Amino acid sequence: MVMVRQTFGCRIPTLLLVALALSQFLLSVNADVNKTHHVIDRGYGQALYEHFQQNNLRAITTLMVADQQPQTSRQQDQSDLLLADLYYRYGLFSESDRLFSRLLTDDIDHALLTRVKFNLARLNHEQGNNQESLKLLSLIDSPLPDQLQDEKQYLLTNLFIINQNIEEAKKTSSTINPKSIWYHYAGYNLGIGLIENGQLDEGLTLLEQINLLEEGTEELLALRDQVNLSMGLSLLRVNRPETALNSLQRIRLDGPLSHTALLATGWAWTGLEQSAKALVPWLELANKNTVDAATQEALLAIPTTLEQNSKPKLAVQYFTLAANQFDRQLEVLEQSVKTIRAGELIGLLNQNALIYPNSAKFAASSLQSTTAPYLHILIASADFHRELKRYQELVDISSTLNHWNRNLPTLSLMLDERRQRFVNKQPLLEQTSSFENLSRLRRSRDDLAVQLKLVESDDSSLELATEQEKIQLQRLDKIAANLISIGERRDTSDKQDMHRLLNGLLSWQIRTSYATRLWTAKKQFIGLDTALSSASTRAESLRQIGVDSISRFDQFKARISTQRGKIGGLIERVANLMNRQEERINLLAISTIELQKQHIIQLRLNARYSLARLYDKLVTE
Image (cartoon, rainbow, N blue to C red; front, side, top):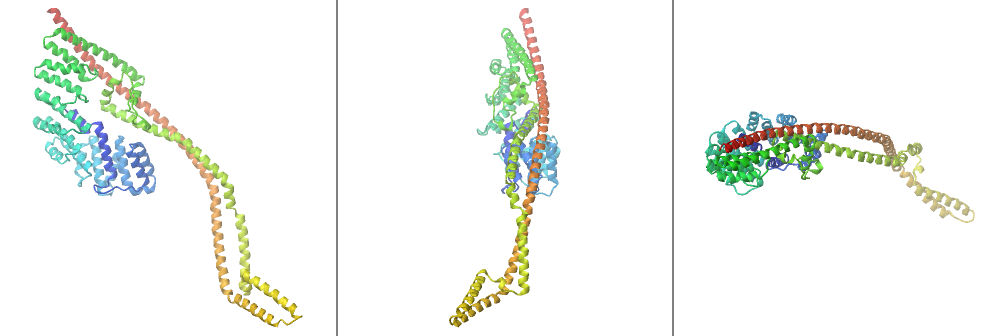
C-alpha cells in the first residue's frame, strides 16, 4: 500500500502534465487572484509564449538571452520565477533551488513571494526534504490563486500523512475545494494513510466517497479504479473477501488495473471457498498478455486450485501449459536482451512517441519488436523513467542545435547579400559625403563674408539693394542719358524733374532700409554657417558609416563562423552524451529484464516442481 500511496502522492503522468500546465499558467500569468498579469519585457513575453506552446527548451534559451539585456530587469523577478519552474521541470533541482532561494531573500512583491515559497516547498518535497517543505508552506500567510491554493493544501495533507499526523491531515484536506481534483487525491492519500495506521473502517469510508462521485474525466475514472483496487486488497488482507469482491468488481475491465483486479477477484472467491468461481477470472486472465505479472501468477494459481479440488490430471495439463509459457517467455526475454544490445530499444521508444524531436511531438506509430511487450514494465521503473526523461531532454537540445546549425548558412547568405548591396551603393554614398562640394561652398561663404564686411564698413546701402531695385536704377540711368541727348533738341525739363523724383525716391527707399537689410543679411549668413556645419557633420558621419560598415560585415561574418564552430562542438558533445545515455537506458532495460527472468525462472521451477510432484502422485495412485 505504501507504493500505491506514493504513486498517487506524486500523481499519475497524465494528471501531472495537466496539473503542472494549469498550475504554471496560474503561476506565470496571474499576478494575483483578481489582477491581470501584464507583460512588459519582450524577452519575458516570448518565453511565456514558447512555454505555453510546450517548447520549454526554447523558453529557457529565450530567458537566458533576455537576462543579458538590461530592459528585462523591469520584470526580472517574474522571469526568474518562470526560469526556476522550467529548471524544475527539467530536473535541474540545484539551479531551480538557487533561483527560488534568491527570490525568497529579495525584496519582491508579496504575491510573488508567496508563490516562490510554494514552489520552493514543492521542490523540497520532490527532493525528500519534507520538513523543510512543511516549514516553507507554514510561512505562506496569504491565499494563492485557486488551483495553487488547492495544490498547496494537497501537499500539506501529504506531508502530515508522512509525519503520521492524521488529524492535521484531515483538517487540511477538508479545506480543499470539493470540486477540485486535488480534493479527491488528498482524500485517496488520506484514506490509504488511515488504513496503514490501523483505522481500516474509517479509511474505507473515506475511499468510498470517491466511488460515489458522478461519472467524470478519464483521470477521475482511473482514480476510482485505483481506489477500488486498494480497498479490495486491503479487505483481502483482513480476510473480508465478500466485501473485497464488491470493490474489485467495480474496476473497469478495459482499464490499466484490470489484470490485477482479475487476479485479486480470484483470490477473493478462493477466500469464500468457491474455487470454481475463482477459476473464471484466472482463466480469463490466462488468455491475456503473459508478460503481465498478474497473468503469470494466474498461470500457477489455476492448476494449484484444480489440484486442491481433486482434479490432478487437469492440474497437470495447466502446470504443463504454465511451464511451457514460462519457457517461451524466457526465450523471448533472451531475444529481447540481444535486440536491446543491438540498439533496438531506442528505436522502439522513438516509434512509440516516448522520445521525439521537437518537430514531431505528436507523431506516433507501432513497431513490432520482441521488446515491445515489456515496454510497460520498463517504463514503470522510476529509474528508467528518469533516464528516459534525461534522454528526451538531450533529444530536445540536439534538435534545437541542429535547427540553429541549419540556419547559419542562411544567415551567412543574407549577410553576403547585404554586403554586396552596400558595396553597390557605396559610390553614391561616397559622392554624397564628398568634401569637395563643401570646400567650394566654404570658399563662396568666405567671399560673401568679405563683401558683407566691406558693405558694413563703407556704409554702402546700394550693395544691399535687391535685384529688382538694381534693375530699376539701371533703367533710370539709361533714361537720364536719353534725356540729356534729347535735351539738345527740345525742352525736357519736366521729364528731368520726374526722373530726379523717381531716382530720389528709389535711393531714399534703399537708404532707409539699409539697417534692416544689413541685419537680415547677417542673420542669413549665420544660417549659412549653421547649414555648412551640419552638412560637414553629416558628411563625416556618412564617411564613417562607409568605413565602419565593411568592418561590421566582417565582424558578423567572423561571429557566424565562430558560432558555427561552437554549435558544431556542442552537437558533437550532445551526440556523445546521447550515446552514453542510450547505453544507460539499455543497461537499465537489460537489468529490469534480467530481474524479470529471475522471477519467471522461479515461477517455472514452481511449475516444474508441482508437475513432478503430481506425476509422482499419479504414478503412486
